[in-house]
Image (cartoon, rainbow, N blue to C red):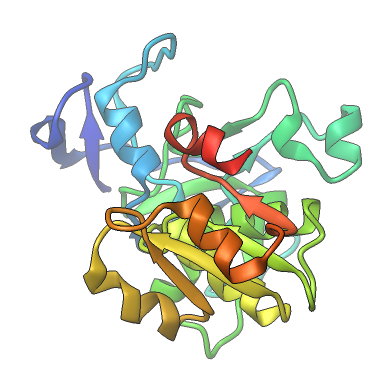
Length: 249
């Protein structure tokens, strides 16, 4: 099969389009014919290499995958439209058994720092338990955007109990996780305040469900939030990290 492979860390020029042996799924795995693999920022981090992380080369990137079942298995018919849940875990520990696989000590991501090849290829082999069947009306493009961004967002909203009547601050309306969180929080009936770093993104943020948009390049986030709410928000969805942590607190 054809695949975009990296043999060393570096820039986009390290992606090599080449022939590689077709993956061979075990009895607990299935072969997926890749129709769409979205570009996640994780792909860039893995390609560039992160301090303290090791990767066996050659490696195929790509964690946001949608496609069709391409091998016989016990759960899905060949040709079924599916998306791939990219998280890999032991399935046996306390966290896995309580639905918190991301806290498993062995957690990793397909195509990430897992040494498991991802979706920058014609085919990918995936554990059967990571396959999610998608509705016929959903496009492969749409499905490939769900695996990381939307599940990350959904987990944060559930953890912070963002429901109808609550007010939530969501950083980065223009990012994948940010935009997904706005849509999901709005859909749950929450009042959504979000931030942008470019005034051109304000209209888009409102279009996808934000009630208030703060331009962080011109406005102070804390002051604006207090003007809007009077006493702060019920939850902060901070997926940025160091640069926003103190503001969140």
